[in-house]
Image 1 (cartoon, rainbow, N blue to C red):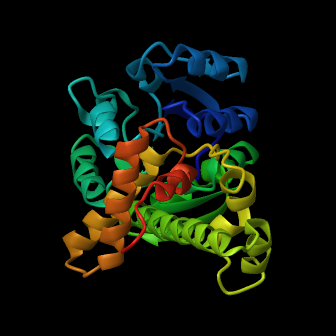
Image 2: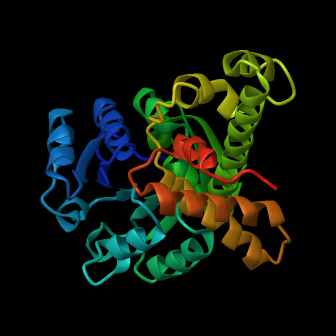
Length: 299
């Protein structure tokens, strides 16, 4: 049985750069959505989009059949769902929780067990694509958890994403998201290093990018990040270095948990943590290029 948008009540917790356009798309598609974010500006923006800006997470969740979380990490998700002021006990019986944050997969499995004891079913459904694709509803969504529950919420997910993948058991969506961002960060790091080496030798960075994009070095960074953000040193893609560093730690922790040797994962995670420590939490993730410029030359 699929959700009926004419009667289903949705609580959307987290109206940040990604959450706000996602929740607003649900409202525009005819869903009844109560949203909460501690930022008054975010709440006002959601109200302007036609949603109900709730005064608290508990108020947003009261009697809702579905609660969607789009928060910084799994600790924040756990706190808002099952913490001392958690909302899980205020949802409708048999409610569904959809964690669309980038959370740690092992913690997601533990949270699913805790929610099951409260008669709430958890799906993990992290997204990829950035703010632009959140706005136009073309995100890639990786859904882990019970297949019947995933089918039930498919009409809601279809409003948010153009590519929806069922990845397997609970936690598998979060695992896939962390691994995707590891591959993305590795590609961006390599691309930035290549441009710096080539420029020092006398190659034009824009020409290098054009060549990479019709050659085997092509990746997401060469296609969508180098010319608008890295080469002009704009460093304003809209995705923070803090979130990328967190996802890289998650990927490396997953490798450790599974006992898989992953030396490049460890190196990339360490490098990006160093960049975060140096540049601060407000830095855009494309500023990894600026960090690389400060590294001493090899002997």
